[in-house]
Length: 180
Image (cartoon, rainbow, N blue to C red):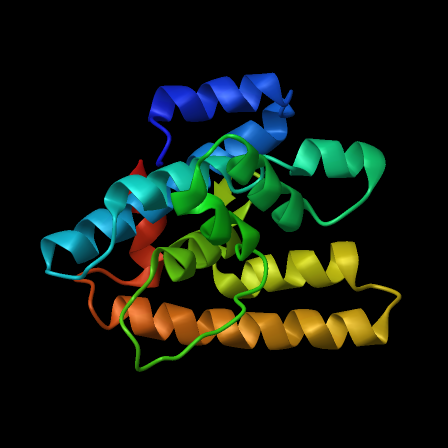
C-alpha cells in the first residue's frame, strides 16, 4: 500500500520526526514530485504517488537513529513494512545507497528519491557539488575510507542525474526555482 500525504504526516508525528528533518523531507518531496510528475507526463513508467510518499518518509527512521544509533534507511524500510506500506519500503531502504543502478534501465522511483535527497542540504536546494562538500565535511572528515565511499556514492548520483535529466525539459540548476 502507498500511504496518502495525510498518512505520511501522521507517521512523521507518530515517530516524533524532528522539525529540521521534516523540513528537509518536504523539500526532498517537492523535488521528487516535480521530477516524477514531469517524467510520468512524458511517458515514463513511474508512480508519482509512490515517489511522493517515499520522499516524504525517506528519513522516517532518522530521529530514532540519531538518538539510538543505527542505519536510518534500513530502519525506515522496517517502519514502512510494519505499517504495510510495502510499495515504498524498498525506495526508502535505498535512499542513501542504491543497491543496483543501470543507466540503461528504465527510470525508477528509487532513483528519483535517492537523487532528490542528494539535492537538499538541510532545507535548501543545492547542487550535487555543494551537497558532496557538506557530506564530506560532516561525515568523512577524519575517515579516509568513508570519504572514498561518499565520493563513490556521489559518482553514482551524478550518473543518476544524467539519466533523469536526459528525459526532462529543465536542467538540474533550474530545480530550485521550479519547486518554489
